[in-house]
Image 1: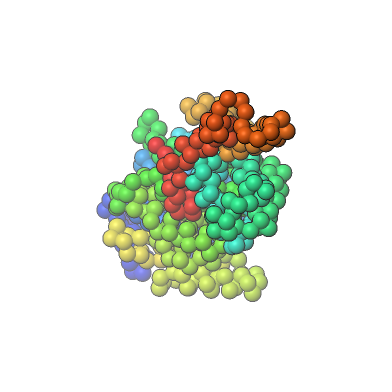
Image 2: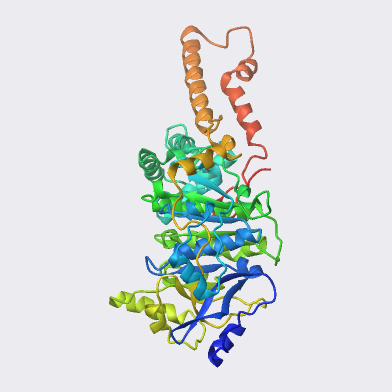
Length: 514
């Protein structure tokens, strides 16, 4: 140990002297010095109490989530990372030693060793390099889909009725053409009477939804929906050596579709919530989920959507999952959600404009009382430094600590494209999810129904033209009706409907059938 710490610094450091397993964040900054003997840490059991990593662009947020993810994986906790800019894939490869890394390690008392971590790489709908991640429309649900389609509240409620109708009728919505087929049917002469039976859906609103779907598909969004649907339990796996698997969702090729990928991330989280059992407080999380560019999730969100996010974040903790939101300022996150984020790593903020000043003051108010002048600290700390407060092992907030963060031990940047491609194709999951499949679903069923209707009308017209009075062909009216294609179709439809209405949970997402 070095020289004795100043009294105020010693008091702060004592708040981070946890007895159990913890993640090492860095060393305390006090009086312009980095005090390597005062280590700032997060207790491992508190990682499922959620967290926030915030700060202006270029202040080191991505490196912070990489640092936390590495240590989680090393302690046997699976991690999910969204890689929006394409620079997180380096977590799979050992880092590169250098003067800056050596200096940082010396400052914070870190024994740095180049280390890569077991990783899987995914891509939404297979757009980009990664194992394709798809969801069925049925599973995605009406609330999330409304967010993607940018529907208003009335249209969102109407879409919910359409999903309810499809669920009741056994019309599986696997991809966009299935949903489009159901909406088209409900706006047709044959389907219009059905609207009255599901709460009076207006044909005008149905038409708006249909146009939104058509435009959405025209933008190339169809690949994200379909089968095989991704099983989010894949994120909970461990590597053969017992380390947690780092699941990296590569989003660089869809970063121009923020409404889509941010909502898709929420589907992944909601699907985990639906499927995982209650476990209560655990010694370490079953998964820690990093939600990058979190402000995109909340922009333009409906009341129902925000309520569902709040509920998911509040309840998923009891299922052993921790969620970290990564964004620029705490004000990007609604107060009801922010209040549930027990662990905070706040990087530097800018204060160039009146709006910046307002955001700075708002951020300071979200921290506990502090021995620091937080406005000064938050505008003066450098890249790779942050203001930290976490939950202690007893669940109480720790003292606010300005911290110089450790250097990640994995590569701080992307791996080469060829290496990434090779890792994807070598995965045991690639063959499971690589090829899209198109099973019989709503589109095929409604198409078959329409064909049978046309055939039946033609047969009836021909019979009427060639008959006098009464049925011909040697059978009774009942026999003819029972033998007709329309009656057989009705029986098939009734058979598929029994017990088929889908149980929906948070966000109206479907519970996975095991």
